[in-house]
Image 1 (cartoon, rainbow, N blue to C red):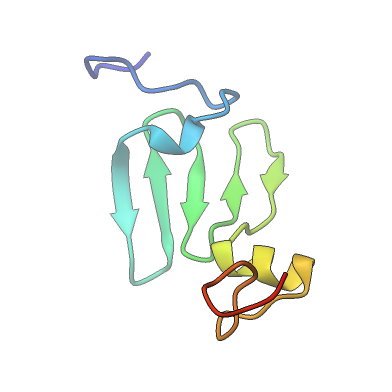
Image 2 (cartoon, rainbow, N blue to C red):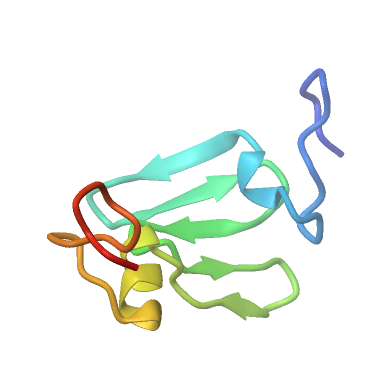
Amino acid sequence: MCPHSPSCPDAMALDHEAARSVACHPEQGWSLLCNGVVVFEDTGELLPGGDTVAPHRPTDLWQQVGGSLADPVGSPGTIS
């Protein structure tokens, strides 16, 4: 049970990453959230039931659409 007010989102909620950190270990690259989710510095997650969430960095989106950070799609001066 979450002691915070307002309560932290449940581990299965879409916004579960918004829960407060209760243990941080940056030297090891992970933090434990109030809802039991372990988040890793590479943005991967381990959910309380053992399920995993693959890393989801914003830069991964550029690779999926074929863009690059140096020349983002839709930036001024480019033709889309």
